[in-house]
Image (cartoon, rainbow, N blue to C red; front, side, top):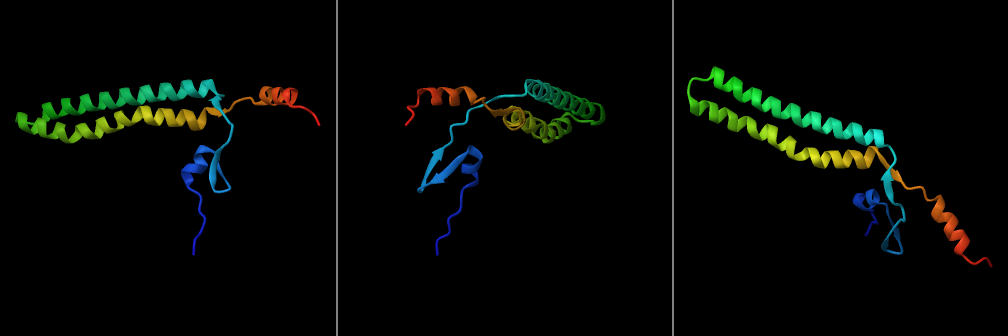
Length: 122
């Protein structure tokens, strides 16, 4: 018993099933909300700066409270991945947030007018 299920990745990309093959829709995404792009970029920079300041503060506190240097290094090694991993993910998240919240289909009215003018009437 075979069930036909669509792949969620195909739906996200705007692909539709037609006769068993995937056909892409002719929709081009462009930035429709430039203020939202600016807000997302500023938020990403602020988040990154706060993470770096947090890491520096944690290392400072470790140096002030711990007696031996190896304890400071050990605790810093524990905290470092917790700050570095989010920093590495910020560009990917920024790109996805811009794609989701600030982009939309391009104004296709000009292409529709061009297609009507160039198509022969029968």
